Image (cartoon, rainbow, N blue to C red; front, side):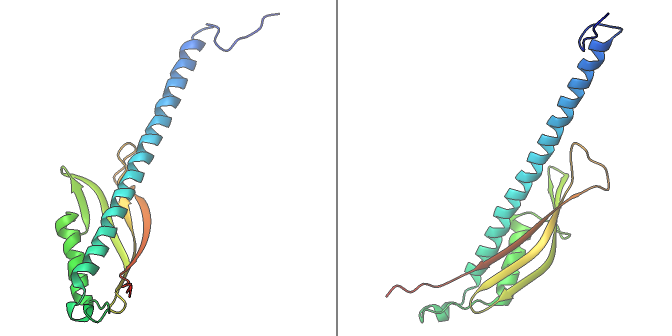
Amino acid sequence: MKKAFLFKDNKGNVLFITIVIIAVIIFITAIVVEWHRTITIADNFDVEITRALKSSIDLSLKDEYRKDGVSVMDSKKAEDEFYNYLFEIMKLDENFKYYESGKFIYSLNIENIKFVSEPPWIYIDGYIEVAPVLFGMADSMYEINFSKGIHNMRLNYE
C-alpha cells in the first residue's frame, strides 16, 4: 500500500503547491499594504481636518469680548477660514479632491457642517473617498466616515 505525501514529487504536485503558496502570500501582502495605505491616509486626513477646525476657531474669535473673559466667534469668518485652510493648506481643488504628484488620492465629501458663535463650536460630518491602488478599478472607492466637533472653551483661573 502506497502512502501519498503532500510534497512528494508526483507529476508536478510540488511545483503547483509552491506556486499556490507564493500566490497566497503575495495576495495577503497586497491586502495588508492596501489596508495600511488607507489607514495612513485616514489618519493624515484626521490630523489635517482637526487643524483646519482649530485654526478657523482661533482666527475668528472676536477680540472685543476676550477682555471680559467671554469667547465669541464670528461664524462667517470661521467658515471662510475653514475653507481657506482646505484649499490653500490641504491643497484640495474646487471639487474637494486631493491629488499628489498628479495622482488622485482622496475626495472630501462634507455632509453637514455647523458653526456656532457662542460658545465657539464647529461640527463637521462627512466622509472621504479613497481610491485603491493595488486593486484599483476605475469605479471602486473606499469610503471612510468622519465626524469632528471642536470647541473653544475659556477657562478663567482667578
